[in-house]
Length: 489
Image (tube, rainbow, N blue to C red; front, side):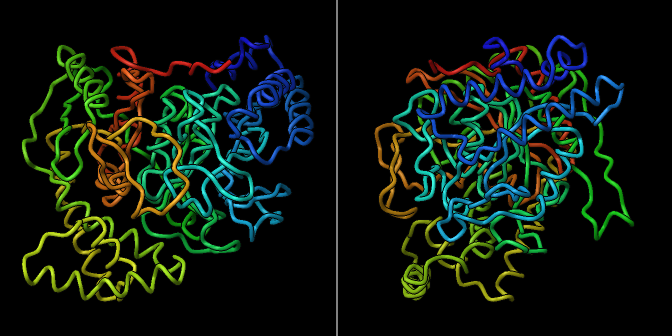
């Protein structure tokens, strides 16, 4: 059954439908691979094998009777540990939730189950999904299957590592600050950050268990080894939650183009606020050159600048998560507010991200309203931009997967870009546009850098243009990139 390890979700479903493989065999194959390799990667943390086998037997019995359980009938998958799963411990990486066993599934999880999926277990994440690395005191550290000395990314790091390692063909993750895009990039898999609001986030931790409201910026989305599988999972999960479903339905537009030659493609690879390491840049540029004969390339010039986008995004982000930061950090950042105000008056340049993160942690409601107005203006700017283009290609982040750094904090850590130390918070820069403006963004593998680590490109589309970004990522694989298994034993 080893040959099943890197089959896509769509291929596995085809095998199930044809009867070449039964669901129990597929589940057992995934379990065997997890048990053989997970010790090195530590992606799958809470395991639910016996219930999975029971569900597989039920799926096989239903199929033998001619019953169709849905688009994911009999397909094994894993779920990020921030999404509640009924009867299975859900910790969100927090010691306080070490024994939390939900009575109900998160909406996205329930929809996957309703489509016939089978859950094998939960995947690791940083505590409360709050980092671009995956480690916590409950389950420990997740390693990158391309190089176990390096991070798998975060916060959906266990999700990306599980898919990249061939443990399962499909995974549900979540994102508020590149938490799908970044680990997909570091592990060389596909990830999709949906348009904001189309996949319900109810049942996600954080907020606290039982939270009914949904935070600004946050989304739930899939990770897979093919772009087509992203579409399969999104179709299963997307649609209004209970409070809205009596009044509207979701009907996402079809892809704007069917073939590459009909796509209008813009690219944006340079910005002084967040330089790109040469190893990453080489793969990005090679992808643009590979596309040049096949698409209509559009020069957007200096239409977009990170210096105007990132402050709006970071203020909104910290407005969501700042209130839950540790009290000593909140006290320290409050003390910094007068310093930043004085620096602004005197024209002294300060770190743009750190300054706006500090201010975002202490936003009043009127200040949030001003930040939201900035975001709305950005959304209108994007609305106009996507009249002239279909997709925008950008980096996901400035570096390939970096060595584990579990000490310090977001402000003290550094990443190395072209031999220079750069702020760890650079992780927010290239994902800021899509997240702040509620746009769909698909992270697609495009190659392996000279350091032997994968590189992805970010495919951003118009609001509700999820099928456009996913389809473009699917077509891109015919020209360059696509998933390649990591050098895992």
